[in-house]
Length: 327
Length: 309
Image 1 (spheres, helix red, strand yellow):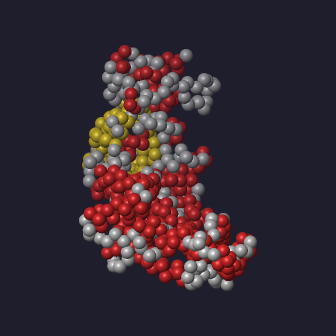
Image 2 (tube, rainbow over the protein chains, first blue to last red):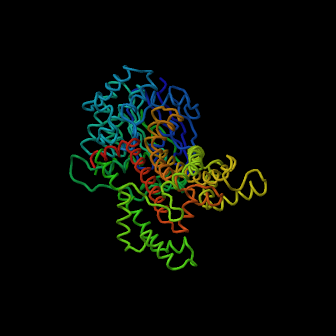
Image 3 (cartoon, each protein chain N blue to C red):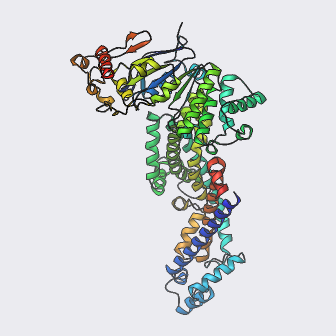
């Protein structure tokens, strides 16, 4: 089966500084993939690059295929069909993501006209249905309101309505709840997973919140310094992380049950993209680093069914983790 | 909304009163109209009679009250030089001034706005750099320098156009060019930076992400937002339509309001100066009011604020 989206060797550089250094990622139809990592690790850039949404001075190379068709370098008219029609995206800060001088109706109907060939009464009815779908009360009257007349959570709901207006096969949610209150966060995530089920749509959830990802995604990819370092089914990654960075991320989470323990922090900081260490980018912060780690960046290698990891010390790392668990 | 504009209009009226008061006081402190108009050789009794006839001997507060009393009756005073009503003198000059400033205004908009938009959309390109360099030159060079430069090239060297006067439409070309170039430069810079600011906003990325073609992203998402700051500078330019050509009219010997103002100030022809300043203040203030109104029209956020203010 060909995957819905397959990304191979995707690299991005801004003014000669590499921020994405060969990302390989595949996504099946209807699948929910979580993308985690610190800010600056390239989670958003991966998808902005895939959709051609980066500023012109960004140098993008590699390959991004949607149903086998190459998106990088595709003509603008083709990309316009893909964006919103096949792959939709919602962003972190809902307050500034909608155009402040246009009504909600205008912005919703624009997407409907572009991807669904609707017009007249039909378009209005569909806009109304979408607002009801995402749970905006009094949708009929609110259609003619402007973005500033809604709360942050409501604007994010409208963004979701707008994103699914074109019946996309994939929705990329870029930190969709980071700017929202904790109670609203849960509602928005709930809404996303309901809509995903109803529309049998694939979802990429970009987040630095591991809990959010664990709850909502089938599979998780961990990014570090512009590469994917580990990819695994969610339950396996959280139970048994292999890459030392993934271990570090999960070790920094407080456990809900069991005895209280000291949370472990990852020593050091993310490397400056302009001065990447040779070899594995995580080696300078890694307690298991050995001499060969500094020689070459380790490729993603399979370690089990459905699991890949980019670490030459994967075995040792696994032992170390089991050792800690045994103590 | 109503209250929002009531406050604005009240403030506008206060501005006009302040401008007129300031002009009134400064003019009376800065020289004796009797000496200026009759000359220093005039016999003292003639000077005294002149001062008495125009009420210049009265204390300044009394003159001020008289002045406002007259305005209330719709009288703006008479010119001390030829005794004609000041308003008549000013009004007959306005068509000549508008003949320069109106075409110049449209040229500024027609050149400056598209140049700024184009530069912003092609940021860092050769065209962008050229537009910006021209713009910096355009608003750092004072208009009299530009005017003299144009005269030097097109009137003196090439002999294509007349250097001054008002005999035919050809006489208007150089003054209009002088006025438009500087304004177009200012407008291009403003439009460019407004556009760049807007193009960097997340909602532009949202529009692209939902598949709106770039051309439409620019016209229906970016331009309406960039229009808001640009309208401010346009409003200012409308405000200068009446008296924005003082220097240019003087250089090109164009008989408009600007030149009348220069002559009237030199002669301390009080009523005429005050009349012009009143008119200028009124155009400035009303163009500001129009801008405020347009803001409400262009930006729904301000509309909401106005409703609660």
